[in-house]
Length: 222
Image (cartoon, rainbow, N blue to C red; front, side):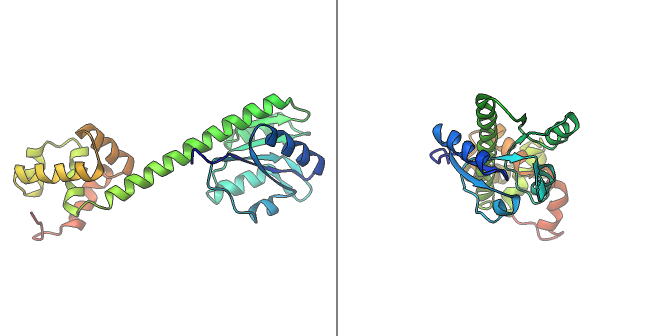
């Protein structure tokens, strides 16, 4: 992901604006894709690398603010920089409350726009890194047995080995083995690291509710 060139998408119904922005972004090393409408944008596959969207507020067949809401509803988290020649304070407040990176009035300084693009791409890069890390943790979690997940969850809830042993009906040494296996498979460098992973995965939140489902009465294994 780090090696991929960032992509800046532009949606503006004015061809001269699109051409100008395309030249500006390419001059600083960004890939660009320009569209005359949100519909055209949605028909184009998005790159896998960091990206952001430069969006006109007012277009003949669509409102940029409404399109921002549509993207959010469909789970498209691409950061947005708004451009407009007809902006007002309520409009900008609405855009920023909905998560826009910046709301710039035309004519704008190129450096202001480039600064906003840099921030937007930084946000998207951070999001992609978080998603990649979460996916990696989920893959590690999938290698744990049900018992190892159970022990991991209880460790994350602050239980000591002795308490876990009493709670799930195992010997303390067996609990230590399961905890060690969980740490090895999760590649946790310490118990604190394992707890952090469990919190990120929501494992500790499922500790109480999920135990009986994993091990109905009379079926607990060693």
